[in-house]
Length: 342
Image (cartoon, rainbow, N blue to C red; front, side, top):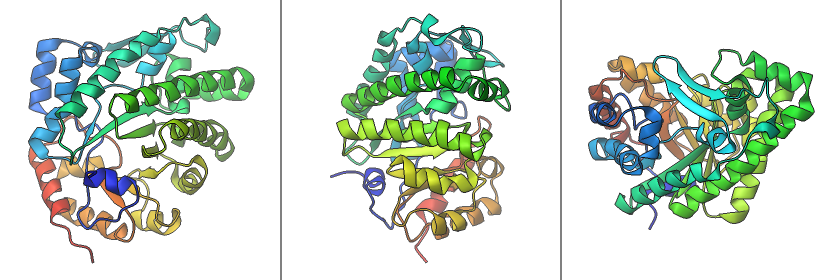
Protein backbone atom coordinates (compact mmCIF):
# COMPACT_ATOMS: atom_id res chain seq x y z
CA UNK A 1 0.00 0.00 0.00
CA UNK A 2 1.61 3.32 -1.04
CA UNK A 3 2.04 6.12 1.47
CA UNK A 4 -0.02 9.32 1.25
CA UNK A 5 2.62 11.22 -0.72
CA UNK A 6 2.84 8.59 -3.42
CA UNK A 7 -0.96 8.24 -3.52
CA UNK A 8 -1.34 11.98 -3.99
CA UNK A 9 1.25 12.13 -6.77
CA UNK A 10 -0.74 9.38 -8.49
CA UNK A 11 -3.87 11.52 -8.37
CA UNK A 12 -5.61 10.84 -5.05
CA UNK A 13 -7.18 13.88 -3.38
CA UNK A 14 -6.63 12.96 0.26
CA UNK A 15 -8.12 14.79 3.24
CA UNK A 16 -4.79 14.52 5.05
CA UNK A 17 -2.35 16.50 2.94
CA UNK A 18 1.08 14.88 2.64
CA UNK A 19 4.06 17.17 3.04
CA UNK A 20 7.79 17.43 2.60
CA UNK A 21 10.02 20.49 2.24
CA UNK A 22 12.57 21.28 -0.41
CA UNK A 23 16.05 21.30 1.22
CA UNK A 24 14.53 19.65 4.29
CA UNK A 25 17.82 17.74 4.70
CA UNK A 26 20.28 20.51 5.39
CA UNK A 27 21.77 23.42 7.25
CA UNK A 28 18.82 24.48 9.41
CA UNK A 29 19.09 21.17 11.31
CA UNK A 30 21.62 21.02 14.17
CA UNK A 31 22.15 17.30 13.56
CA UNK A 32 23.15 18.07 9.97
CA UNK A 33 25.58 20.77 11.05
CA UNK A 34 27.18 18.39 13.54
CA UNK A 35 27.65 15.68 10.91
CA UNK A 36 29.06 18.11 8.39
CA UNK A 37 31.55 19.43 10.93
CA UNK A 38 32.66 15.86 11.52
CA UNK A 39 32.79 14.69 7.92
CA UNK A 40 34.00 17.73 5.98
CA UNK A 41 32.80 19.53 2.86
CA UNK A 42 29.54 19.22 0.96
CA UNK A 43 30.79 17.03 -1.88
CA UNK A 44 32.50 14.71 0.58
CA UNK A 45 29.15 14.24 2.31
CA UNK A 46 27.36 13.51 -0.96
CA UNK A 47 29.87 10.79 -1.82
CA UNK A 48 29.94 9.25 1.66
CA UNK A 49 26.85 7.11 1.11
CA UNK A 50 26.34 6.33 4.79
CA UNK A 51 26.52 10.04 5.66
CA UNK A 52 24.29 11.03 2.73
CA UNK A 53 21.70 8.44 3.76
CA UNK A 54 21.82 9.62 7.36
CA UNK A 55 21.30 13.25 6.28
CA UNK A 56 18.39 12.24 4.06
CA UNK A 57 16.73 10.50 7.01
CA UNK A 58 17.36 13.18 9.65
CA UNK A 59 14.30 15.37 8.93
CA UNK A 60 11.98 12.34 8.90
CA UNK A 61 13.15 11.29 12.34
CA UNK A 62 12.60 14.78 13.69
CA UNK A 63 9.40 15.82 11.87
CA UNK A 64 7.84 12.65 10.37
CA UNK A 65 7.52 14.14 6.91
CA UNK A 66 5.84 11.95 4.30
CA UNK A 67 8.77 11.97 1.91
CA UNK A 68 12.56 11.69 2.11
CA UNK A 69 14.34 13.77 -0.55
CA UNK A 70 17.74 12.46 -1.59
CA UNK A 71 20.68 14.43 -0.20
CA UNK A 72 22.71 15.30 -3.27
CA UNK A 73 23.05 18.17 -5.75
CA UNK A 74 21.90 18.94 -9.29
CA UNK A 75 25.53 19.44 -10.35
CA UNK A 76 26.32 15.75 -9.99
CA UNK A 77 25.19 15.43 -13.62
CA UNK A 78 27.81 17.81 -15.09
CA UNK A 79 30.34 16.22 -12.74
CA UNK A 80 29.52 12.85 -14.34
CA UNK A 81 29.70 14.47 -17.78
CA UNK A 82 33.34 15.33 -17.09
CA UNK A 83 33.46 18.80 -15.59
CA UNK A 84 35.42 19.27 -12.39
CA UNK A 85 33.22 20.34 -9.47
CA UNK A 86 34.04 22.03 -6.18
CA UNK A 87 32.03 23.93 -3.60
CA UNK A 88 33.80 26.99 -2.22
CA UNK A 89 32.85 28.18 1.25
CA UNK A 90 30.76 31.33 1.01
CA UNK A 91 30.90 31.35 -2.80
CA UNK A 92 28.98 28.32 -4.02
CA UNK A 93 29.77 25.76 -6.72
CA UNK A 94 32.45 26.04 -9.38
CA UNK A 95 32.57 23.93 -12.55
CA UNK A 96 35.50 23.76 -14.95
CA UNK A 97 36.19 24.00 -17.79
CA UNK A 98 33.44 26.51 -18.50
CA UNK A 99 31.56 25.66 -21.70
CA UNK A 100 31.45 29.33 -22.69
CA UNK A 101 35.18 28.86 -23.36
CA UNK A 102 35.40 25.15 -24.21
CA UNK A 103 33.48 22.82 -26.49
CA UNK A 104 31.23 20.14 -25.07
CA UNK A 105 33.30 17.43 -26.76
CA UNK A 106 36.33 18.48 -24.71
CA UNK A 107 34.74 16.76 -21.70
CA UNK A 108 35.49 13.14 -20.88
CA UNK A 109 32.51 11.50 -19.19
CA UNK A 110 32.95 9.81 -15.82
CA UNK A 111 29.65 7.90 -15.43
CA UNK A 112 30.87 6.04 -12.35
CA UNK A 113 30.41 9.30 -10.44
CA UNK A 114 26.69 8.52 -10.44
CA UNK A 115 26.99 5.10 -8.78
CA UNK A 116 27.35 6.29 -5.15
CA UNK A 117 24.13 8.30 -5.52
CA UNK A 118 22.25 5.13 -6.38
CA UNK A 119 23.77 3.44 -3.35
CA UNK A 120 22.49 6.26 -1.13
CA UNK A 121 18.99 5.90 -2.58
CA UNK A 122 19.05 2.18 -1.88
CA UNK A 123 20.19 2.67 1.72
CA UNK A 124 17.51 5.27 2.43
CA UNK A 125 14.71 3.26 0.86
CA UNK A 126 15.69 0.27 3.01
CA UNK A 127 15.40 2.42 6.15
CA UNK A 128 11.98 3.92 5.35
CA UNK A 129 8.59 2.56 6.32
CA UNK A 130 6.00 1.66 3.71
CA UNK A 131 4.17 4.92 4.51
CA UNK A 132 7.22 7.05 3.70
CA UNK A 133 8.10 7.84 0.09
CA UNK A 134 11.63 7.98 -1.29
CA UNK A 135 12.09 10.97 -3.61
CA UNK A 136 14.91 11.22 -6.11
CA UNK A 137 15.71 14.25 -8.22
CA UNK A 138 17.76 15.87 -10.93
CA UNK A 139 18.23 19.33 -12.31
CA UNK A 140 16.46 20.10 -15.56
CA UNK A 141 18.54 20.74 -18.65
CA UNK A 142 18.27 24.55 -18.79
CA UNK A 143 19.23 25.05 -15.16
CA UNK A 144 22.12 22.58 -15.33
CA UNK A 145 23.32 24.24 -18.55
CA UNK A 146 23.51 27.65 -16.87
CA UNK A 147 26.15 26.28 -14.51
CA UNK A 148 27.99 24.28 -17.17
CA UNK A 149 28.31 27.25 -19.49
CA UNK A 150 29.24 29.90 -16.91
CA UNK A 151 31.08 27.62 -14.50
CA UNK A 152 29.13 29.05 -11.58
CA UNK A 153 25.79 30.51 -10.58
CA UNK A 154 24.76 33.99 -11.74
CA UNK A 155 21.94 36.45 -11.20
CA UNK A 156 20.65 36.73 -14.76
CA UNK A 157 22.44 33.86 -16.57
CA UNK A 158 23.54 36.32 -19.23
CA UNK A 159 26.40 34.16 -20.56
CA UNK A 160 24.13 31.15 -21.05
CA UNK A 161 21.26 33.12 -22.54
CA UNK A 162 23.67 34.91 -24.87
CA UNK A 163 25.18 31.62 -26.00
CA UNK A 164 21.71 30.20 -26.68
CA UNK A 165 20.95 33.20 -28.93
CA UNK A 166 24.39 33.40 -30.54
CA UNK A 167 24.94 29.72 -31.29
CA UNK A 168 21.70 27.79 -30.81
CA UNK A 169 23.10 24.65 -32.46
CA UNK A 170 26.00 24.41 -30.01
CA UNK A 171 23.72 25.17 -27.10
CA UNK A 172 21.22 22.56 -28.31
CA UNK A 173 24.02 20.00 -28.23
CA UNK A 174 24.69 20.87 -24.57
CA UNK A 175 20.99 20.58 -23.73
CA UNK A 176 20.70 17.25 -25.57
CA UNK A 177 23.72 15.85 -23.73
CA UNK A 178 22.30 16.89 -20.36
CA UNK A 179 18.93 15.36 -21.26
CA UNK A 180 20.58 12.05 -22.19
CA UNK A 181 22.55 11.78 -18.94
CA UNK A 182 19.58 12.94 -16.86
CA UNK A 183 17.38 10.19 -18.28
CA UNK A 184 19.95 7.59 -17.25
CA UNK A 185 20.49 9.25 -13.87
CA UNK A 186 16.81 9.33 -12.94
CA UNK A 187 16.31 5.81 -14.22
CA UNK A 188 19.21 4.67 -12.05
CA UNK A 189 17.69 6.34 -9.00
CA UNK A 190 14.33 4.68 -9.67
CA UNK A 191 15.98 1.28 -10.13
CA UNK A 192 17.74 1.82 -6.78
CA UNK A 193 14.47 2.54 -4.95
CA UNK A 194 13.24 6.07 -5.69
CA UNK A 195 9.43 5.96 -5.81
CA UNK A 196 8.99 9.42 -7.31
CA UNK A 197 11.40 11.95 -8.78
CA UNK A 198 11.48 15.72 -9.13
CA UNK A 199 12.95 17.79 -11.94
CA UNK A 200 14.28 21.10 -10.62
CA UNK A 201 14.34 23.90 -13.20
CA UNK A 202 15.39 26.51 -10.68
CA UNK A 203 16.31 29.19 -13.26
CA UNK A 204 13.40 28.72 -15.68
CA UNK A 205 12.18 32.22 -14.85
CA UNK A 206 15.08 33.92 -16.63
CA UNK A 207 13.82 33.05 -20.13
CA UNK A 208 11.51 34.75 -22.61
CA UNK A 209 8.37 32.80 -23.64
CA UNK A 210 9.92 31.50 -26.88
CA UNK A 211 13.14 30.51 -25.14
CA UNK A 212 11.14 28.92 -22.31
CA UNK A 213 9.37 26.75 -24.88
CA UNK A 214 12.64 25.60 -26.43
CA UNK A 215 14.96 25.30 -23.44
CA UNK A 216 12.54 24.38 -20.62
CA UNK A 217 9.42 22.73 -21.98
CA UNK A 218 11.00 20.70 -24.80
CA UNK A 219 13.90 19.21 -22.76
CA UNK A 220 11.65 18.43 -19.81
CA UNK A 221 9.16 16.74 -22.12
CA UNK A 222 11.98 14.61 -23.55
CA UNK A 223 13.17 13.57 -20.10
CA UNK A 224 9.66 12.79 -18.88
CA UNK A 225 8.78 10.77 -21.98
CA UNK A 226 11.92 8.63 -21.81
CA UNK A 227 11.75 8.02 -18.05
CA UNK A 228 8.03 7.20 -18.23
CA UNK A 229 8.71 4.71 -21.02
CA UNK A 230 11.03 2.82 -18.67
CA UNK A 231 9.20 3.45 -15.39
CA UNK A 232 5.52 4.14 -16.19
CA UNK A 233 4.40 3.86 -12.55
CA UNK A 234 6.90 6.35 -11.12
CA UNK A 235 5.45 9.86 -10.73
CA UNK A 236 7.53 12.78 -11.99
CA UNK A 237 7.18 16.21 -10.39
CA UNK A 238 8.18 19.18 -12.51
CA UNK A 239 9.27 22.37 -10.75
CA UNK A 240 9.96 25.29 -13.11
CA UNK A 241 10.68 28.05 -10.60
CA UNK A 242 9.77 31.50 -11.85
CA UNK A 243 7.62 30.19 -14.72
CA UNK A 244 4.74 32.54 -13.83
CA UNK A 245 1.97 32.48 -16.43
CA UNK A 246 4.01 29.97 -18.47
CA UNK A 247 3.37 27.36 -15.78
CA UNK A 248 0.13 26.22 -17.42
CA UNK A 249 1.85 25.48 -20.73
CA UNK A 250 4.62 23.64 -18.85
CA UNK A 251 2.04 21.49 -17.06
CA UNK A 252 0.18 20.67 -20.28
CA UNK A 253 3.14 20.07 -22.57
CA UNK A 254 5.82 18.30 -20.51
CA UNK A 255 3.75 15.31 -19.38
CA UNK A 256 4.73 15.63 -15.72
CA UNK A 257 2.51 13.87 -13.19
CA UNK A 258 2.57 16.81 -10.76
CA UNK A 259 3.71 20.40 -10.92
CA UNK A 260 5.57 22.40 -8.28
CA UNK A 261 4.29 25.94 -7.70
CA UNK A 262 6.70 28.59 -6.42
CA UNK A 263 5.82 31.31 -3.91
CA UNK A 264 5.36 34.03 -6.55
CA UNK A 265 2.27 32.32 -7.96
CA UNK A 266 -1.16 32.91 -6.48
CA UNK A 267 -2.43 29.47 -5.43
CA UNK A 268 -6.01 30.49 -6.30
CA UNK A 269 -4.86 31.30 -9.85
CA UNK A 270 -2.92 28.04 -10.08
CA UNK A 271 -5.88 25.99 -8.85
CA UNK A 272 -8.14 27.59 -11.47
CA UNK A 273 -5.65 27.54 -14.36
CA UNK A 274 -3.69 24.28 -14.21
CA UNK A 275 -5.14 21.16 -15.87
CA UNK A 276 -8.04 19.70 -13.90
CA UNK A 277 -7.04 16.91 -11.54
CA UNK A 278 -3.30 17.49 -11.95
CA UNK A 279 -1.57 17.14 -8.56
CA UNK A 280 0.14 20.32 -7.39
CA UNK A 281 2.93 20.88 -4.90
CA UNK A 282 3.69 24.03 -2.95
CA UNK A 283 3.71 26.92 -2.40
CA UNK A 284 4.42 28.64 0.94
CA UNK A 285 7.05 31.39 0.86
CA UNK A 286 10.19 30.11 2.66
CA UNK A 287 10.66 33.58 4.17
CA UNK A 288 7.26 33.26 5.83
CA UNK A 289 8.45 30.04 7.44
CA UNK A 290 11.56 31.88 8.58
CA UNK A 291 9.39 34.63 10.11
CA UNK A 292 6.74 32.45 11.79
CA UNK A 293 3.93 33.96 13.84
CA UNK A 294 0.18 34.21 13.15
CA UNK A 295 0.75 35.09 9.48
CA UNK A 296 2.37 31.69 8.95
CA UNK A 297 -0.78 29.90 10.11
CA UNK A 298 -2.97 32.19 8.02
CA UNK A 299 -1.02 31.65 4.81
CA UNK A 300 -0.75 27.89 5.34
CA UNK A 301 -4.54 27.83 5.51
CA UNK A 302 -4.84 29.96 2.37
CA UNK A 303 -2.63 27.60 0.38
CA UNK A 304 -4.46 24.50 1.61
CA UNK A 305 -7.89 26.03 0.95
CA UNK A 306 -6.90 27.10 -2.56
CA UNK A 307 -5.92 23.56 -3.55
CA UNK A 308 -8.70 21.79 -1.64
CA UNK A 309 -10.38 20.50 -4.79
CA UNK A 310 -7.36 18.80 -6.35
CA UNK A 311 -4.53 16.50 -5.19
CA UNK A 312 -2.05 18.62 -3.23
CA UNK A 313 1.34 18.00 -1.65
CA UNK A 314 2.13 20.75 0.83
CA UNK A 315 5.59 22.20 0.33
CA UNK A 316 7.44 25.48 0.15
CA UNK A 317 7.75 27.63 -2.94
CA UNK A 318 11.49 26.89 -2.88
CA UNK A 319 14.07 25.52 -0.45
CA UNK A 320 13.95 26.03 3.31
CA UNK A 321 16.35 28.72 4.51
CA UNK A 322 19.33 27.73 6.62
CA UNK A 323 18.39 30.08 9.49
CA UNK A 324 14.80 28.81 9.80
CA UNK A 325 13.97 28.05 13.46
CA UNK A 326 13.02 24.47 14.26
CA UNK A 327 10.00 25.81 16.19
CA UNK A 328 8.63 27.40 13.02
CA UNK A 329 8.84 24.10 11.16
CA UNK A 330 6.94 22.48 14.03
CA UNK A 331 4.35 25.26 13.80
CA UNK A 332 4.02 24.65 10.07
CA UNK A 333 3.52 20.91 10.53
CA UNK A 334 0.84 21.48 13.17
CA UNK A 335 -1.01 23.87 10.87
CA UNK A 336 -0.94 21.46 7.92
CA UNK A 337 -1.87 18.43 10.01
CA UNK A 338 -4.70 20.36 11.70
CA UNK A 339 -6.25 21.63 8.46
CA UNK A 340 -9.76 20.53 7.55
CA UNK A 341 -11.19 20.75 4.06
CA UNK A 342 -13.65 23.69 3.78
